[in-house]
Image 1 (cartoon, protein in one colour):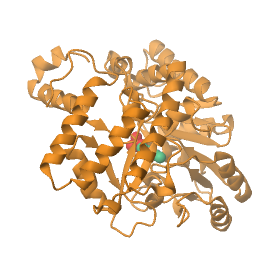
Image 2 (image 1 turned 60 degrees about the vertical axis):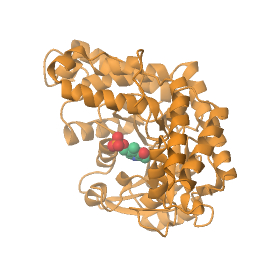
Image 3 (image 1 turned 90 degrees about the vertical axis):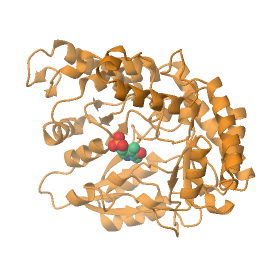
Amino acid sequence: MNPLNALAATDPALVHMIAAEEARQFYTAKLIPSENYASSAVMEATGTVLTNKYSEGYAFKRYYEGQQFIDQIESLAIDRAKALFGADHANVQPYSGSPANLAVYTGLIPKGSDNQRILGLGLPAGGHLTHGWKVSATSRFFQAAQYGVDPVTHLLDYSAIAAQALEFRPAVLICGATAYPRIIDFAKFAEIAHACGALLVADMAHIAGLVAGGAHPSPVPHADAVTTTTHKTLRGPRGGMILCKSQHAAAIDRAVFPGLQGGPHNHTTAGIAVALKEAATPEFRAYAHQIVANSRALAATLQSEGLPLATGGSDNHLILFDATALNATGKQAAQAMDLAGLEANFNSIPFDTRSPFDPSGVRIGTPSLTSRGLKEAEMAHVGKWIAQAIRGREDAAVLARVRGEVFDLMAQFPPPGFEQPYPARP
Ligand SMILES: *Cc1c(COP(=O)(O)O)cnc(C)c1O
Protein backbone atom coordinates (compact mmCIF):
# COMPACT_ATOMS: atom_id res chain seq x y z
CA MET A 1 0.00 0.00 0.00
CA ASN A 2 1.05 3.61 -0.61
CA PRO A 3 3.40 4.63 2.22
CA LEU A 4 1.39 7.87 2.64
CA ASN A 5 4.56 10.00 3.03
CA ALA A 6 2.91 13.28 2.05
CA LEU A 7 -0.07 12.53 4.24
CA ALA A 8 2.16 11.66 7.18
CA ALA A 9 3.80 15.08 6.89
CA THR A 10 0.49 16.96 6.64
CA ASP A 11 -1.78 15.00 8.92
CA PRO A 12 -0.07 12.48 11.21
CA ALA A 13 -3.18 12.03 13.36
CA LEU A 14 -5.15 10.88 10.33
CA VAL A 15 -2.34 8.57 9.18
CA HIS A 16 -2.45 6.95 12.59
CA MET A 17 -6.17 6.24 12.20
CA ILE A 18 -5.70 4.87 8.68
CA ALA A 19 -2.85 2.64 9.83
CA ALA A 20 -5.04 1.25 12.61
CA GLU A 21 -7.80 0.53 10.09
CA GLU A 22 -5.26 -1.14 7.79
CA ALA A 23 -4.17 -3.46 10.59
CA ARG A 24 -7.80 -4.18 11.47
CA GLN A 25 -8.63 -5.04 7.85
CA PHE A 26 -5.51 -7.19 7.53
CA TYR A 27 -6.09 -9.38 10.60
CA THR A 28 -9.87 -9.70 10.81
CA ALA A 29 -11.78 -12.21 8.72
CA LYS A 30 -14.10 -9.98 6.74
CA LEU A 31 -17.36 -11.86 6.26
CA ILE A 32 -19.52 -8.88 5.27
CA PRO A 33 -20.81 -9.97 1.85
CA SER A 34 -20.98 -6.46 0.39
CA GLU A 35 -17.31 -5.70 1.06
CA ASN A 36 -14.10 -6.66 -0.69
CA TYR A 37 -10.47 -5.61 -1.17
CA ALA A 38 -9.68 -3.40 -4.15
CA SER A 39 -6.36 -4.20 -5.81
CA SER A 40 -3.34 -1.92 -5.52
CA ALA A 41 -3.87 -0.99 -9.19
CA VAL A 42 -7.46 0.09 -8.49
CA MET A 43 -6.40 2.13 -5.46
CA GLU A 44 -3.55 3.76 -7.33
CA ALA A 45 -5.96 4.89 -10.04
CA THR A 46 -8.31 6.41 -7.46
CA GLY A 47 -5.43 8.29 -5.82
CA THR A 48 -4.47 10.32 -8.89
CA VAL A 49 -4.78 13.90 -10.18
CA LEU A 50 -8.04 12.90 -11.87
CA THR A 51 -9.71 14.06 -8.67
CA ASN A 52 -8.80 17.63 -9.70
CA LYS A 53 -11.00 17.82 -12.80
CA TYR A 54 -14.60 18.92 -13.40
CA SER A 55 -16.25 17.09 -16.31
CA GLU A 56 -20.00 17.74 -16.18
CA GLY A 57 -21.65 16.14 -19.18
CA TYR A 58 -20.54 13.11 -21.15
CA ALA A 59 -17.51 12.34 -23.34
CA PHE A 60 -17.24 14.84 -26.22
CA LYS A 61 -20.22 16.84 -24.84
CA ARG A 62 -18.83 18.51 -21.73
CA TYR A 63 -19.53 21.80 -20.06
CA TYR A 64 -15.87 22.47 -19.17
CA GLU A 65 -12.73 22.62 -21.30
CA GLY A 66 -9.65 20.44 -20.95
CA GLN A 67 -11.42 17.10 -21.32
CA GLN A 68 -9.30 15.33 -23.94
CA PHE A 69 -7.86 12.80 -21.48
CA ILE A 70 -10.89 12.53 -19.20
CA ASP A 71 -12.99 11.70 -22.28
CA GLN A 72 -10.57 8.88 -23.12
CA ILE A 73 -10.69 7.54 -19.55
CA GLU A 74 -14.49 7.60 -19.27
CA SER A 75 -14.85 6.06 -22.74
CA LEU A 76 -12.42 3.30 -21.76
CA ALA A 77 -14.47 2.48 -18.65
CA ILE A 78 -17.70 2.50 -20.69
CA ASP A 79 -16.27 0.28 -23.44
CA ARG A 80 -14.96 -2.19 -20.88
CA ALA A 81 -18.30 -2.29 -19.04
CA LYS A 82 -20.20 -2.91 -22.28
CA ALA A 83 -17.80 -5.63 -23.38
CA LEU A 84 -17.64 -7.38 -19.99
CA PHE A 85 -21.40 -7.54 -19.50
CA GLY A 86 -22.55 -7.55 -23.15
CA ALA A 87 -24.56 -4.35 -22.68
CA ASP A 88 -25.78 -1.89 -25.33
CA HIS A 89 -24.99 1.13 -23.20
CA ALA A 90 -23.17 1.94 -19.98
CA ASN A 91 -23.15 4.95 -17.67
CA VAL A 92 -20.24 4.90 -15.22
CA GLN A 93 -20.98 8.22 -13.50
CA PRO A 94 -23.37 7.29 -10.62
CA TYR A 95 -21.68 8.11 -7.33
CA SER A 96 -22.75 4.79 -5.85
CA GLY A 97 -25.42 2.09 -6.05
CA SER A 98 -28.20 4.08 -4.37
CA PRO A 99 -27.93 7.10 -6.70
CA ALA A 100 -27.78 4.68 -9.66
CA ASN A 101 -31.14 3.21 -8.63
CA LEU A 102 -32.81 6.59 -8.18
CA ALA A 103 -31.42 7.66 -11.57
CA VAL A 104 -32.83 4.61 -13.32
CA TYR A 105 -36.34 5.07 -11.93
CA THR A 106 -36.14 8.78 -12.79
CA GLY A 107 -35.00 7.98 -16.32
CA LEU A 108 -37.45 5.19 -17.05
CA ILE A 109 -40.60 6.72 -15.55
CA PRO A 110 -41.66 9.81 -17.50
CA LYS A 111 -42.39 12.96 -15.53
CA GLY A 112 -46.13 13.49 -15.19
CA SER A 113 -47.01 9.93 -16.24
CA ASP A 114 -50.09 8.48 -14.50
CA ASN A 115 -48.07 5.43 -13.56
CA GLN A 116 -45.36 6.32 -11.04
CA ARG A 117 -45.42 2.88 -9.43
CA ILE A 118 -42.36 0.77 -8.58
CA LEU A 119 -42.43 -2.76 -7.19
CA GLY A 120 -39.39 -4.30 -5.51
CA LEU A 121 -38.32 -6.89 -2.96
CA GLY A 122 -39.05 -5.75 0.60
CA LEU A 123 -36.16 -4.98 2.93
CA PRO A 124 -37.11 -7.67 5.48
CA ALA A 125 -37.09 -10.26 2.69
CA GLY A 126 -33.62 -9.25 1.48
CA GLY A 127 -34.34 -6.27 -0.80
CA HIS A 128 -32.43 -3.00 -0.71
CA LEU A 129 -33.68 0.27 0.81
CA THR A 130 -33.64 1.87 -2.65
CA HIS A 131 -36.11 -0.69 -4.03
CA GLY A 132 -38.90 1.48 -2.63
CA TRP A 133 -38.64 0.78 1.11
CA LYS A 134 -40.59 3.26 3.25
CA VAL A 135 -37.64 5.19 4.72
CA SER A 136 -35.94 5.57 1.31
CA ALA A 137 -36.52 8.61 -0.89
CA THR A 138 -37.34 6.12 -3.65
CA SER A 139 -40.70 5.63 -1.90
CA ARG A 140 -41.17 9.38 -1.54
CA PHE A 141 -40.67 10.19 -5.21
CA PHE A 142 -42.40 7.08 -6.52
CA GLN A 143 -45.39 5.08 -5.40
CA ALA A 144 -43.77 1.95 -4.07
CA ALA A 145 -44.96 -1.51 -3.14
CA GLN A 146 -43.02 -4.55 -2.06
CA TYR A 147 -43.10 -8.25 -2.77
CA GLY A 148 -41.69 -10.83 -0.36
CA VAL A 149 -40.39 -14.37 -0.33
CA ASP A 150 -42.17 -17.63 0.42
CA PRO A 151 -42.86 -17.95 4.17
CA VAL A 152 -41.73 -21.57 4.32
CA THR A 153 -38.88 -21.88 1.79
CA HIS A 154 -37.72 -18.22 1.95
CA LEU A 155 -37.33 -18.44 -1.84
CA LEU A 156 -38.65 -15.94 -4.37
CA ASP A 157 -42.11 -17.18 -5.35
CA TYR A 158 -42.38 -16.15 -8.99
CA SER A 159 -46.07 -16.95 -9.35
CA ALA A 160 -46.93 -14.87 -6.27
CA ILE A 161 -44.79 -12.01 -7.60
CA ALA A 162 -46.54 -12.28 -10.98
CA ALA A 163 -49.96 -12.11 -9.35
CA GLN A 164 -48.96 -9.07 -7.28
CA ALA A 165 -47.42 -7.34 -10.31
CA LEU A 166 -50.57 -7.90 -12.39
CA GLU A 167 -52.64 -6.37 -9.61
CA PHE A 168 -50.30 -3.43 -8.81
CA ARG A 169 -49.27 -2.71 -12.44
CA PRO A 170 -45.92 -1.06 -11.71
CA ALA A 171 -44.16 1.12 -14.28
CA VAL A 172 -40.92 -0.47 -13.09
CA LEU A 173 -40.46 -3.92 -11.62
CA ILE A 174 -37.21 -4.22 -9.64
CA CYS A 175 -35.37 -7.45 -9.01
CA GLY A 176 -32.11 -7.99 -7.20
CA ALA A 177 -31.27 -8.20 -3.52
CA THR A 178 -28.92 -7.43 -0.74
CA ALA A 179 -29.56 -10.51 1.38
CA TYR A 180 -30.76 -13.35 -0.86
CA PRO A 181 -28.58 -16.47 -0.87
CA ARG A 182 -29.87 -18.06 -4.08
CA ILE A 183 -29.82 -17.62 -7.86
CA ILE A 184 -32.25 -15.00 -9.17
CA ASP A 185 -34.15 -16.05 -12.29
CA PHE A 186 -33.97 -12.87 -14.36
CA ALA A 187 -35.75 -14.48 -17.35
CA LYS A 188 -38.77 -15.14 -15.12
CA PHE A 189 -38.72 -11.57 -13.86
CA ALA A 190 -38.66 -10.36 -17.49
CA GLU A 191 -41.73 -12.51 -18.25
CA ILE A 192 -43.55 -11.02 -15.26
CA ALA A 193 -42.60 -7.48 -16.29
CA HIS A 194 -43.79 -8.04 -19.86
CA ALA A 195 -47.06 -9.55 -18.70
CA CYS A 196 -47.92 -6.47 -16.62
CA GLY A 197 -46.48 -3.89 -19.02
CA ALA A 198 -43.64 -2.87 -16.71
CA LEU A 199 -40.01 -2.17 -17.48
CA LEU A 200 -37.58 -4.46 -15.67
CA VAL A 201 -34.71 -3.09 -13.60
CA ALA A 202 -32.22 -5.61 -12.24
CA ASP A 203 -30.00 -4.46 -9.39
CA MET A 204 -26.94 -6.71 -9.41
CA ALA A 205 -24.98 -4.69 -6.83
CA HIS A 206 -24.07 -7.74 -4.77
CA ILE A 207 -23.50 -10.21 -7.57
CA ALA A 208 -21.91 -8.13 -10.37
CA GLY A 209 -18.59 -9.93 -9.90
CA LEU A 210 -20.30 -13.32 -10.03
CA VAL A 211 -22.09 -12.28 -13.23
CA ALA A 212 -18.84 -10.96 -14.74
CA GLY A 213 -17.11 -14.24 -13.91
CA GLY A 214 -19.92 -16.49 -15.14
CA ALA A 215 -20.85 -17.76 -11.66
CA HIS A 216 -24.40 -16.31 -11.73
CA PRO A 217 -26.70 -15.89 -14.77
CA SER A 218 -26.59 -12.39 -16.21
CA PRO A 219 -29.57 -10.03 -15.98
CA VAL A 220 -28.28 -7.99 -18.93
CA PRO A 221 -30.13 -9.86 -21.72
CA HIS A 222 -33.40 -9.73 -19.75
CA ALA A 223 -33.61 -6.33 -18.06
CA ASP A 224 -34.30 -2.93 -19.59
CA ALA A 225 -31.72 -1.50 -17.21
CA VAL A 226 -29.21 -3.05 -14.82
CA THR A 227 -27.71 -1.16 -11.90
CA THR A 228 -24.72 -2.11 -9.83
CA THR A 229 -22.19 -0.95 -7.33
CA THR A 230 -18.59 -1.36 -8.38
CA HIS A 231 -17.07 -2.13 -4.97
CA LYS A 232 -18.76 -5.36 -3.89
CA THR A 233 -18.02 -8.63 -5.73
CA LEU A 234 -16.81 -6.59 -8.71
CA ARG A 235 -13.87 -5.51 -6.50
CA GLY A 236 -13.47 -1.97 -7.82
CA PRO A 237 -13.49 1.41 -6.08
CA ARG A 238 -16.67 2.63 -4.32
CA GLY A 239 -18.98 3.67 -7.14
CA GLY A 240 -22.01 2.84 -9.24
CA MET A 241 -22.80 1.91 -12.80
CA ILE A 242 -25.87 1.54 -15.03
CA LEU A 243 -26.14 -0.74 -18.06
CA CYS A 244 -29.17 -0.47 -20.32
CA LYS A 245 -30.76 -1.18 -23.69
CA SER A 246 -30.06 1.46 -26.35
CA GLN A 247 -33.62 2.79 -26.33
CA HIS A 248 -33.27 3.89 -22.69
CA ALA A 249 -29.73 5.27 -22.94
CA ALA A 250 -30.58 8.93 -23.50
CA ALA A 251 -33.22 9.06 -20.73
CA ILE A 252 -30.98 7.33 -18.21
CA ASP A 253 -27.95 9.48 -19.05
CA ARG A 254 -30.10 12.61 -18.61
CA ALA A 255 -31.38 11.33 -15.28
CA VAL A 256 -27.82 10.86 -13.96
CA PHE A 257 -26.62 14.21 -15.30
CA PRO A 258 -28.09 16.80 -15.14
CA GLY A 259 -31.03 15.12 -13.36
CA LEU A 260 -29.43 14.02 -10.12
CA GLN A 261 -25.71 14.65 -10.18
CA GLY A 262 -23.09 17.24 -11.05
CA GLY A 263 -19.53 16.44 -12.07
CA PRO A 264 -18.49 12.79 -12.27
CA HIS A 265 -15.78 11.50 -9.93
CA ASN A 266 -13.10 10.97 -12.56
CA HIS A 267 -10.63 9.30 -10.20
CA THR A 268 -13.32 6.73 -9.39
CA THR A 269 -14.07 6.29 -13.10
CA ALA A 270 -10.39 5.41 -13.62
CA GLY A 271 -10.54 2.89 -10.76
CA ILE A 272 -13.68 1.37 -12.32
CA ALA A 273 -11.87 1.04 -15.66
CA VAL A 274 -9.07 -0.89 -13.93
CA ALA A 275 -11.50 -3.14 -12.03
CA LEU A 276 -13.36 -3.92 -15.27
CA LYS A 277 -10.08 -4.90 -16.94
CA GLU A 278 -9.24 -7.15 -13.99
CA ALA A 279 -12.74 -8.67 -14.05
CA ALA A 280 -12.31 -9.73 -17.70
CA THR A 281 -9.40 -12.07 -16.89
CA PRO A 282 -9.46 -15.88 -16.46
CA GLU A 283 -8.18 -15.33 -12.89
CA PHE A 284 -11.30 -13.34 -12.07
CA ARG A 285 -13.53 -16.07 -13.55
CA ALA A 286 -11.84 -18.54 -11.26
CA TYR A 287 -12.29 -16.10 -8.38
CA ALA A 288 -16.04 -15.79 -9.03
CA HIS A 289 -16.51 -19.56 -9.08
CA GLN A 290 -14.39 -19.98 -5.95
CA ILE A 291 -16.61 -17.47 -4.11
CA VAL A 292 -19.58 -19.77 -4.70
CA ALA A 293 -17.66 -22.95 -3.87
CA ASN A 294 -16.51 -21.32 -0.62
CA SER A 295 -20.02 -20.17 0.22
CA ARG A 296 -21.38 -23.69 -0.25
CA ALA A 297 -18.59 -25.11 1.92
CA LEU A 298 -19.15 -22.53 4.65
CA ALA A 299 -22.92 -23.11 4.50
CA ALA A 300 -22.41 -26.86 4.96
CA THR A 301 -20.16 -26.32 8.01
CA LEU A 302 -22.62 -23.92 9.63
CA GLN A 303 -25.44 -26.41 9.13
CA SER A 304 -23.38 -29.17 10.68
CA GLU A 305 -22.83 -26.82 13.65
CA GLY A 306 -26.59 -26.56 14.12
CA LEU A 307 -27.19 -23.18 12.50
CA PRO A 308 -30.28 -23.10 10.25
CA LEU A 309 -29.84 -21.14 7.01
CA ALA A 310 -32.45 -19.01 5.26
CA THR A 311 -33.50 -20.96 2.14
CA GLY A 312 -31.51 -23.91 3.51
CA GLY A 313 -28.26 -23.08 1.74
CA SER A 314 -26.36 -20.79 -0.62
CA ASP A 315 -25.89 -20.69 -4.41
CA ASN A 316 -24.04 -17.41 -4.53
CA HIS A 317 -21.65 -15.50 -2.26
CA LEU A 318 -24.00 -14.99 0.68
CA ILE A 319 -25.38 -16.87 3.67
CA LEU A 320 -28.05 -15.79 6.12
CA PHE A 321 -28.17 -17.87 9.29
CA ASP A 322 -30.49 -17.93 12.27
CA ALA A 323 -28.40 -17.35 15.39
CA THR A 324 -31.30 -18.02 17.76
CA ALA A 325 -30.69 -21.74 17.26
CA LEU A 326 -27.53 -21.23 19.36
CA ASN A 327 -29.41 -19.14 21.94
CA ALA A 328 -28.12 -15.78 20.70
CA THR A 329 -29.87 -12.91 18.96
CA GLY A 330 -28.43 -11.76 15.64
CA LYS A 331 -26.84 -8.77 17.34
CA GLN A 332 -25.32 -10.83 20.15
CA ALA A 333 -23.97 -13.28 17.60
CA ALA A 334 -22.49 -10.55 15.38
CA GLN A 335 -20.92 -8.85 18.42
CA ALA A 336 -19.41 -12.11 19.67
CA MET A 337 -18.06 -12.82 16.20
CA ASP A 338 -16.56 -9.34 16.08
CA LEU A 339 -14.73 -9.95 19.38
CA ALA A 340 -13.42 -13.15 17.84
CA GLY A 341 -12.06 -11.37 14.74
CA LEU A 342 -14.96 -12.43 12.50
CA GLU A 343 -16.60 -9.37 10.96
CA ALA A 344 -20.27 -9.69 9.96
CA ASN A 345 -23.56 -7.86 10.32
CA PHE A 346 -26.80 -8.75 12.06
CA ASN A 347 -29.71 -9.00 9.68
CA SER A 348 -33.39 -9.88 9.71
CA ILE A 349 -34.26 -13.30 8.42
CA PRO A 350 -37.45 -13.56 6.31
CA PHE A 351 -40.53 -13.33 8.55
CA ASP A 352 -38.35 -12.45 11.51
CA THR A 353 -40.36 -12.04 14.69
CA ARG A 354 -37.62 -9.93 16.28
CA SER A 355 -37.00 -6.21 15.74
CA PRO A 356 -34.71 -5.06 12.88
CA PHE A 357 -32.42 -3.50 15.55
CA ASP A 358 -31.80 -6.88 17.12
CA PRO A 359 -33.05 -9.46 14.63
CA SER A 360 -32.55 -13.23 14.58
CA GLY A 361 -30.07 -13.49 11.77
CA VAL A 362 -26.50 -12.83 10.78
CA ARG A 363 -25.53 -12.15 7.18
CA ILE A 364 -22.14 -13.36 5.99
CA GLY A 365 -20.43 -13.94 2.66
CA THR A 366 -17.25 -15.17 1.02
CA PRO A 367 -16.13 -12.48 -1.50
CA SER A 368 -13.43 -10.99 0.75
CA LEU A 369 -11.99 -14.20 2.12
CA THR A 370 -11.92 -15.59 -1.42
CA SER A 371 -10.00 -12.50 -2.58
CA ARG A 372 -7.40 -13.41 0.06
CA GLY A 373 -7.07 -16.91 -1.45
CA LEU A 374 -8.95 -18.95 1.15
CA LYS A 375 -10.57 -22.12 -0.18
CA GLU A 376 -13.02 -24.79 0.99
CA ALA A 377 -10.62 -26.27 3.57
CA GLU A 378 -10.27 -22.90 5.32
CA MET A 379 -14.03 -22.34 5.13
CA ALA A 380 -14.50 -25.34 7.40
CA HIS A 381 -12.32 -23.61 10.01
CA VAL A 382 -14.16 -20.32 9.60
CA GLY A 383 -17.54 -22.03 10.02
CA LYS A 384 -16.40 -23.75 13.22
CA TRP A 385 -15.01 -20.50 14.60
CA ILE A 386 -18.32 -18.75 13.93
CA ALA A 387 -20.18 -21.39 15.92
CA GLN A 388 -17.55 -21.38 18.71
CA ALA A 389 -17.72 -17.60 19.03
CA ILE A 390 -21.53 -17.62 19.25
CA ARG A 391 -21.63 -20.51 21.73
CA GLY A 392 -18.81 -18.95 23.75
CA ARG A 393 -20.10 -15.41 23.58
CA GLU A 394 -19.92 -15.01 27.33
CA ASP A 395 -16.53 -16.65 27.67
CA ALA A 396 -13.69 -14.17 27.13
CA ALA A 397 -11.12 -16.97 26.92
CA VAL A 398 -12.97 -18.69 24.06
CA LEU A 399 -13.36 -15.41 22.16
CA ALA A 400 -9.68 -14.57 22.63
CA ARG A 401 -8.58 -18.05 21.54
CA VAL A 402 -10.71 -17.91 18.37
CA ARG A 403 -9.47 -14.39 17.63
CA GLY A 404 -5.87 -15.58 17.86
CA GLU A 405 -6.56 -18.45 15.48
CA VAL A 406 -8.37 -16.15 13.03
CA PHE A 407 -5.49 -13.66 13.07
CA ASP A 408 -2.95 -16.46 12.50
CA LEU A 409 -4.87 -17.69 9.46
CA MET A 410 -5.41 -14.21 8.03
CA ALA A 411 -1.68 -13.45 8.34
CA GLN A 412 -1.07 -16.38 5.99
CA PHE A 413 -3.44 -14.91 3.37
CA PRO A 414 -2.60 -11.22 2.82
CA PRO A 415 -5.42 -9.42 1.00
CA PRO A 416 -5.08 -7.71 -2.39
CA GLY A 417 -4.09 -4.07 -2.01
CA PHE A 418 -1.78 -4.68 0.95
CA GLU A 419 1.94 -4.64 0.27
CA GLN A 420 4.91 -5.41 2.48
CA PRO A 421 5.75 -4.47 5.11
CA TYR A 422 2.42 -5.76 6.40
CA PRO A 423 0.79 -4.06 9.39
CA ALA A 424 1.83 -5.17 12.86
CA ARG A 425 -0.66 -7.36 14.67
CA PRO A 426 -3.04 -5.23 16.76
C1 LIG B 1 -25.25 -2.13 -1.76
C2 LIG B 1 -26.50 -2.09 -2.56
C3 LIG B 1 -26.97 -0.89 -3.11
C4 LIG B 1 -26.46 0.47 -2.72
O1 LIG B 1 -25.18 0.72 -2.90
P1 LIG B 1 -24.47 1.96 -2.15
O2 LIG B 1 -23.21 2.03 -2.95
O3 LIG B 1 -24.30 1.54 -0.75
O4 LIG B 1 -25.33 3.15 -2.33
C5 LIG B 1 -28.07 -0.95 -3.94
N1 LIG B 1 -28.67 -2.11 -4.20
C6 LIG B 1 -28.27 -3.27 -3.67
C7 LIG B 1 -29.00 -4.53 -4.00
C8 LIG B 1 -27.18 -3.30 -2.82
O5 LIG B 1 -26.80 -4.45 -2.27
